[in-house]
Amino acid sequence: MALIETVNISQNYDGREVVKNINLKVDRSEILTLIGPTGAGKTTLMRILDLLEPPYSGKLFFDGVDVTTPGANQLEARRRMSYVQQRPLVFTMNVYDNIACGLRWRHMKPAIIKRKTEEALELLGMADYRDRAAKTLSGGETQRVAIARALVTEPEVLLLDEPTANMDPVSTAKIEEVLAHIINERKTTIIMTTHNMSQGQRMASRLGVLINGELLQTGSINDIFNQPLNREVAEFVGVENIIKGVVEQRDNELARIAINGERISAITNFAVGEAVYVLIRPETVVFSLSGEAGSARNVFKCKVNKINTVGSTVRIEVACGFPLLGVITTQAAQDLNLSIGKDVYVSFKATAIHVIKRWH
Image 1 (spheres, helix red, strand yellow):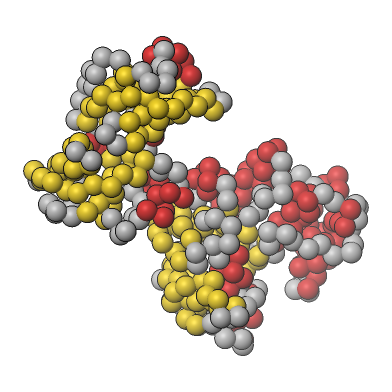
Image 2 (cartoon, one colour; image 1 turned 90 degrees about the vertical axis):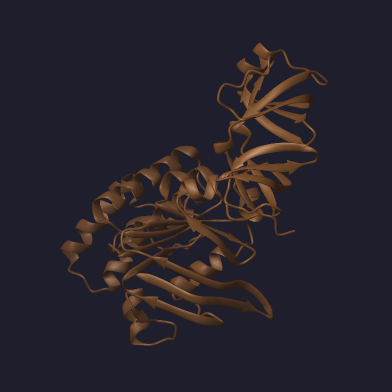
């Protein structure tokens, strides 16, 4: 049985539906990361999960118990959860007392409060701040206090809304280290949101993509980034080659897809005649001057349209009868001596392509 389950959860603000029919199950000790653009509804969903606001419609279950409406069940569930907001508030007291307050509200013994608070201070690297007025802290320091305050009660479920949004890289690395520790040691169930795609990949055991209030896909990191279910997810996770085509021929799972007079070979179960999108990650495109492609089934002679150096990589846009983007290292680009208008061969394997249904 899932620890948390939502059934057709929706939220409506002034007639505007900001969360739409969310069906989600989160198991014990799971780390679920919700990714999506600003305004996708991530914070609203987190507030519903933490029982801070009731949904407009749908049901929410915690440990198999319906906690959709206020009552004793909600109170019991909330005591087993902690929530760190994207812009957390601290009380007008010092750092130590801010962290200890949750334990005091639970009427724990002073010795236990002292031990747990000291441990949380050490864990978050805030021991030297214990006597500082919390209101004087920077945004990143405030976030660390809020996380310490959430962890000190040892919740079963930790909800984190953009937990490192206000932090520098060093502080971000520290928070990720702390979260990794509690994941390993306490087996805490964590649901977090982030705009940071790489952080989502590092921290999650499962990802969910929330766009325009809809949970469009959940799955492993490989599922989301290499096998997106639709164009919206593909675009969000950075699949920049999204090419319209029609399945022309099938030989078992190997298909030929017609694209602007060219043919791309791909592994797919779509039937002949179906309109599809062909998704090709730029990093899987191989460039050469000779056309030798090894085992790759797809080889095209193209013309270079644009070259853009970004850090240690070079983004190369070519025309092959269809537009295609590839990414290679600066050294590889220098070896190829590419320039605008120059002919170049590109190749990519049939197994590197993901094919989805064309919805529009």
